[in-house]
Image (cartoon, helix red, strand yellow):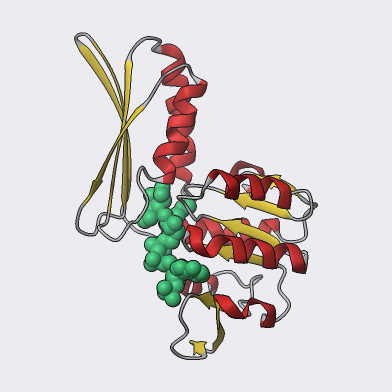
Length: 221
Ligand SMILES: NC(=O)C1=CN([C@@H]2O[C@H](COP(=O)(O)OP(=O)(O)OC[C@H]3O[C@@H](n4cnc5c(N)ncnc54)[C@H](OP(=O)(O)O)[C@@H]3O)[C@@H](O)[C@H]2O)C=CC1
Ligand SMILES: O=C(O)C1=N[C@H](C(=O)O)C[C@H](O)C1
């Protein structure tokens, strides 16, 4: 995701990337952008908004740096612990924060459809099957859990299954089943750039806003 973000940031003239942060730093710059290790956050140049796609181990440092700098945070890191979700709520009293399990427009629409289907199909079984590439560390995916929360708002009690195979970018199937019939709602991401573009759009709209928790739909055109 970091590589997609750096490549696609160039499509948005209103954004200037001043630094890239990762766990290990092998060279001091990527395509001319200064690179910092997560242990060097204190040395970052001034910034208005950070975009975080890391791992739960890296999240606390980025969140802390944003609060310290009074900068906005856009995060798509999944697998966060309950305490980290709580830390987002606390930080949002001081800075604008947008955390989303999925930055694609299609999943935002799917989430609405799932809630509507769950509301209409009381008593049906609800199963969520997510498939991702073999390098993905968390399961169920953040998107599956978010879709499950949408199903729960509609009164369903979802069950989860996870598949890790090859280079699957991300697929989410939400299935409602009863005796004699079944509804399947599916989203398939085929390119990670959709997530990066969504996060870059959110970043450009979040910078400079009042402190608080924001959702993707708050920042759409
Ligand atoms: N919300 C959404 O739409 C999406 C969310 N994601 C989520 O984004 C996250 C990243 O995914 P992906 O890019 O595939 O993962 P990668 O493993 O490819 O990249 C993770 C990045 O985080 C860095 N990192 C790892 N540990 C730490 C740490 N302790 N401190 C600071 N930085 C750290 C890594 O640095 P280094 O390279 O030096 O190890 C690397 O740059 C995952 O949680 C994934 O689920 C992914 C796609 C879409
Ligand atoms: O790790 C990934 O790749 C993805 N993670 C997010 C998730 O956990 O839902 C979003 C997307 O599915 C890709």
